[in-house]
Image (cartoon, rainbow over all chains, first blue to last red; front, side, top):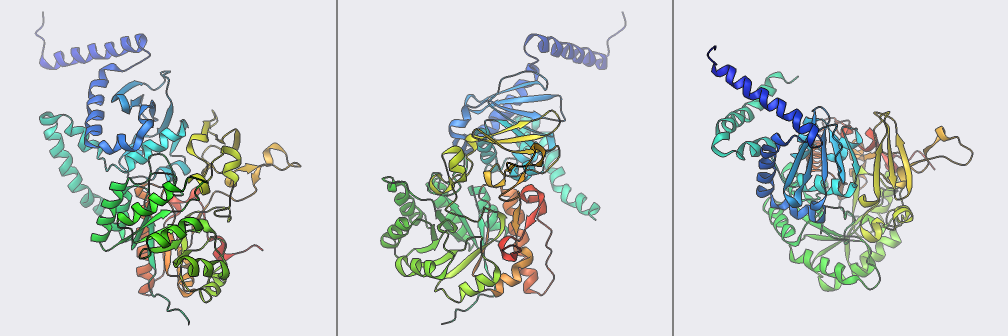
Length: 184
Length: 338
């Protein structure tokens, strides 16, 4: 038997994971459970760091809000009052109370307050459906929160995320300089 | 006696959240206006507005940065329910508000008697647009400033300013109503709630959007479909005044805007004329908008004021991306209708 290299071993493990995804997709409404521990950790870290989000959401925190990432193969269902988040294939039929749909970068901008929700809506960059009140409450709660999704996502992983946090900090510091170099 | 006109107007900017207030102050607002998280103000939207603690902290932040805070208590109390509005007035003063913006005469009377040292401004919701009405508010409640309804042309504002004993504040950017501010009941017909009584026009709980397979989008208010946007067509707020309707003689595909089109006011180009008309303050609409909007609009107007003071040309197309329906208008300031 040929000796198994480290690279081969990693590939075998990845293949197992990919197979597992498809097994889950059939069994559990195409739910991407393997992603959920990571995404849930980030979600809870952000909720803990920004208690004002739950305060502003009020009763709407109990809503199931679907975040539909148009240019990604998945969507998420947020349940803020339960501190839960589900990750599904985008075509999975999952019940929700309200939905906001947009590209990954648009939704990121909206979540971080870098884009005005009304303008994005006027320009059709985002679409909303279902309980409009819940979407408006979430938009306003996020807009007040000064969230930096990437920085806080990396912070959710403590020491493991440290090298990435340092890299991200350098990237943020360098960004204005690089953008300035290419500005018209 | 003729009033002394200000050389530089006060820039009065909106904030729906503490974060937006900080952004507005940092971007160059002279004043930020905001309201409490209840029916006492005309932007009573879910997740928006300030708790008492937030209002105190926000006022402290603004004052530290040499900006003022005006608190809106500008809805009309329902019979037998004035306590909530009186408390809002008392709490706003306790939080350090530099002025109260009120619409209802009863609330104006309460504020004038209970807090005579606090400046009173008359909200646009009071719809006071003639000298007699404005003088009455000034003489009876010691109102120091009136926010003018968006129905007046610049010559009319100039004439008004020469005939009233108080300051005037005019809108220069943001959403437009059907020029019946404080008196519009369209939202009530469809939902039972109005900006006048409940602080919310087309409440989000009554709004639904339906996406069509062809990329179109229907907006519904209560039981009514009020607009249908084609794929890629810029949208507007889901208000009846900006709905598309067909009259009896029209065919289905001939539905059009009867009251007004989805569009935003943008009077940046008219700033020099407005300054000459004698207004004291320029107001930006949009407490329901995000802090990105607040920052962009405040910066644009601060820059425009600075450029104007230096005699430089004004850059007038900077804010179109933020406009409702992707288009703007100078509204009644440049009246082209009778």
